[in-house]
Amino acid sequence: MATRTIREEVLLCLPHLRAFARSLTGNRDKADDLVQDAIVLALSAAAQFTPGTNFKAWIFTILRNRYFNELRRNKHVIEPLEAADIAGLATVAHHDSGLVFDEFRNAFMTLAPSQREALVLVAANGFSYEEAAKVCDCAVGTIKSRISRARRELLRLTAEDAQKPASQPAMVPSPLLTASAAGGSQ
Amino acid sequence: MRPPAGASKGPKRRSRMDIQKPGAVEVREKESVAKDTRLEERVLALYEETVSEPIPDELLKFLDSANRKN
Image 1 (cartoon, rainbow over the protein chains, first blue to last red):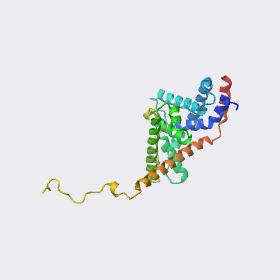
Image 2 (cartoon, rainbow over the protein chains, first blue to last red):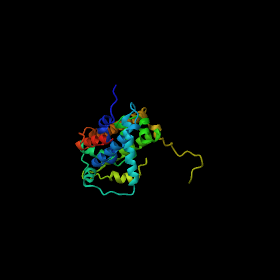
Image 3 (cartoon, chains in turn green, purple):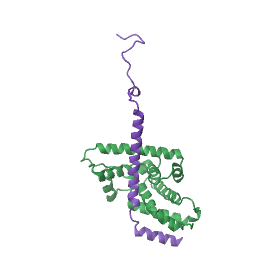
Image 4 (cartoon, rainbow over the protein chains, first blue to last red):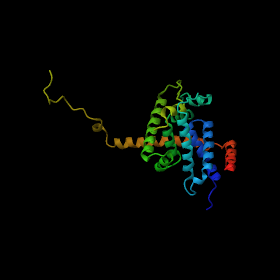
């Protein structure tokens, strides 16, 4: 079987890279910038990739390391909320399925980035706990506990949203502010 | 007047475990698994929403340009 070039591998992973980056940043433009950074880093480190191994896990590791390094570097920078972010974060809690899904999205974005990534790697990408732990450079038990905490928090947040009166907007803090406060920890 | 030590204070209150119906633990476990499954389905739907978006041309051009440089 012919091995794919790095470009072909990246191309196949692009939709997933964008979705993973979006789940970390919560913002389309920042996610695409992060994907571009990951592409440059992956192409320049292509020699370090062992053909036949899991390329997706390899490039996901590059992307998340880049994201958390930037987060640490800008720990004390509080970015102003952009209009698009505000529009995406404030929603009126009507119980129409689309809006319920928006509430879930907002609840998801209030989780610590490390919890979001664990959930996305395992629940959305089908990574095993071991693979996710390798991507996140942590113990398997840490991934399990992040997922467990993320589930509990999501259940709590979505239950709270369901109890709010229809006129009350379900505002949640910016993922960037949450990320800074959490410091990228568990 | 205080009752003497060790005297019975009426019927002992039963704990939650005592009054659980048979199979209650299994029912709660099933509910919990169902909630987790629903949650994970929503995470997957949120993720798939972006995966199914068309890749912006800008990003494809960027990939080709970065690939040429390497």
